[in-house]
Amino acid sequence: MKKKIIIIGSGIGGLGSAALLAKSGYNVTVIEKNATLGGRANIFEAEGYTFDMGPSWYLMPDVFEHYFKLLDEDISKHLDLVKLSPSYRVFFSNDKELPIVDIHSNLGKDLPLFEQLEPGITPKIREYLKRSGEQYEMAKDTFMYRNLGFSLDFLKWDVIKKGIELNPFQTMQSYLNKWFKSERVKKILEYTLVFLGSDPSKTPAMYNIMNAIDFNMGVYYPKGGIYEIVKALVTINKKHGTQFMTNSPVSKIIVKNKEATGVLLENGTVVEADLIISNADLWFTETHLLEKRQQTYPERYWEKAVLSPSAFIMYLGLDRELEILSHHNLRFGGDWKQNFKELFDTPKLPEDPSYYICKPTETDPDLSPPGTDNLFVLVPIPPGLTLSKTDMESYRQKILNLMKTDLDLPDIEDYIVFERSYWSDDFRRDYNAYKGTALGLAHTLKQTLKRPLNYSKKVKNLYYVGAGTSPGIGMPICLISAELVYKRIQKIKTSKPLESL
Image 1 (cartoon, one colour):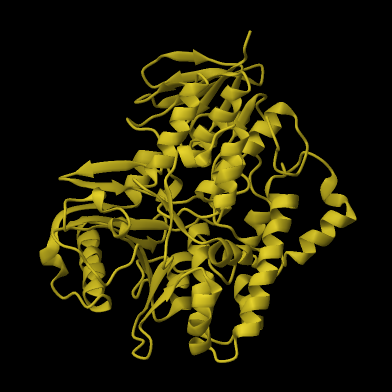
Image 2 (cartoon, rainbow, N blue to C red):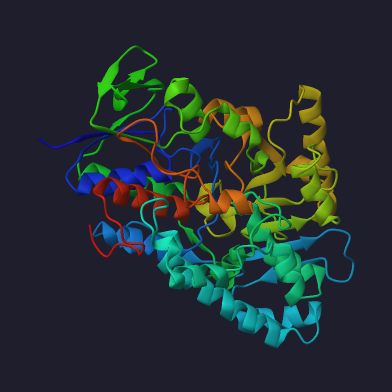
């Protein structure tokens, strides 16, 4: 008889692991608390506008291709991918000399800009990106697809040597300072850390591999929106027999004789299983779905953890098109370091925040009525803040005022015909996110080298997948996490990406 697996949560990691296991012959059921599948990669429609609610960047196309190939699927038959050019636009606040720049992820096109920002930089940026590319391939081949705690391979000299080459004990800030002088260049190379929810002064330099992903591979977009990835994973899952239960919050993981045997739903239904994988927020799984004696990561672990930021998000439907914006747009605050202090060290709503605007209608006009745009505006804010309605209204106005100046659009409020806001409490409500964090655990040095394991040390047959466990944050990384938990269950010990199931 096929072994039964329950997967709690239908984020990218949950759907990814479900497809791998269902294809391999397991009887898989995905249980989702919300009405729609996808976790943070959610979607909604309103008044003719379609909004991706969470992730908006399609990076690491090689990881996506590898994952779909494992399932014997041609990714091009599921996703219509467009390579963006420019990849993104950067707005430097209060910079009269060069307030707006475009990055193309094409060194031939980008070198003149870098030379303008830092004369003589060409040989350095070429060498920097060459090394980043080599380190990215090394990381994929040695560390990213390796299950922590599964073997003693880390003690082998060749593995240790490769680990040292990844600069694990330098920070991104100190590493970039050795290469470049221009603060604007360094900001462009550091912005990807926002996706990891980390401060450059505390993030290991090994994450310079993100620059190789950005500049050597480019930024893509699946026509129809990011939710097309979720739809593709659901289609593949159904092909292999995965069952789905939505609107079904789990209240408890049932444990008998230290072994997970099923889940209890909030409506009182018991669903039995041989194995359980939780793609729910790891804090919530550990501290709410398990009893104290069953917790590998109890409350005291989370009290000491460094969290990634939460976010204030505005979903805006406009009555016209905005030519000044590209598909992806980044506004860098004037005092970069102060912004990170306000996010991590002395938590408060940032005074001069860096923020991000996605205008998917630049590439995909069908997402809004003809002649209009929709915007996804994201401002990183500290997790755990208690905000009043007045605080939120005031900060919303602050961001709109910044947009008026930064984008030279003094009448932008008059263009808004639909608006929805999303705050920390929404992340708590929809995703059981600890302190309303948008991403989970930040990628500090300690939390990179010692990410929570993808299995319970206290409960047999209980596993974890997604951003809360290894390797970490991001859609492609969660697909790697899905492969790692598949390896763990199948007792596959290779550190390399699988060639087949």
